[in-house]
Image 1 (tube, rainbow, N blue to C red):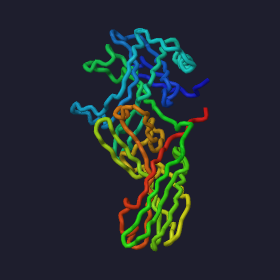
Image 2 (image 1 turned 90 degrees about the vertical axis):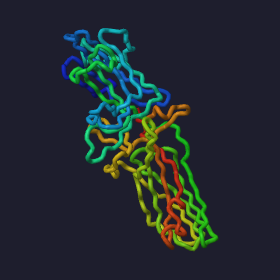
Image 3 (image 1 turned 30 degrees about the vertical axis):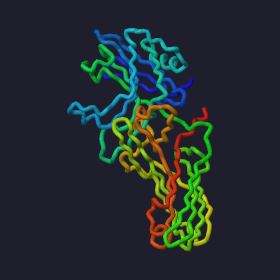
Length: 358
């Protein structure tokens, strides 16, 4: 059978039990895996209430326990409700996944299917600080079953014991066909010298996988009489929170110095390897991570792939990376006393997960 593990959650009153066969749903760019599940319903004591199942994609930007003055710290990006009981006509085509879950649920099982639109963001978590409590900020997807008279009446109070929920993730894998790597170059002349330094940095492919070593090939032609004492390579993550404000912030996720030297009037051609990892950035509050399920480990957030014509605002959080290379030279630190930014080349970096073989 296609699923070895079933994810199950029962409401506090025991009347609702939610079954899912997986919690990761893949965005294939032109389509997203359907969310196929089953809800077991005990119809006794429902009164005039109905049974609803909903899938919501929401942006959480504050702790729910701070919601004491009517401020909402959660904004729904997309939400869909289905009435499962009494039967209102939702009859999904039954799949192998449905049949397996229906066997688990028994006679009171009701199948449902949600189709996630392709223009929604992937799951992203912002890393909490050491003292932060409650749910982390970020974009999440949640399947929720509940008892209520109507699907979303803001005046109707829904008791917590009448609900059950499971968080799921929308994820992207690297495409099969990737292009060639990026290249950046800089030719800089300096004060008190009529000769330049030429720096070229390049990557051998377009996309790298989380945890893999990234080879950065450098070519340096030093026509000055100074000595390149050191090479510094950094990787920065830029997180653009476009949903509720124009917040855009950059955090360093790797900084390495290589003790390579390039004498005056000499050349240098070498590949330096770097590996940006979450393990080395656990204390950085606000760092974007791939969506996290409870108590599971995760990794640095994958690069956001934006399709042409897509509304950036609905994406919630955009993540990008860049590699910076700069040269430290004898005679006052950086070349000719210039600042680091004056001698830096930058390369865009795409970090993603490989597509599983199956």
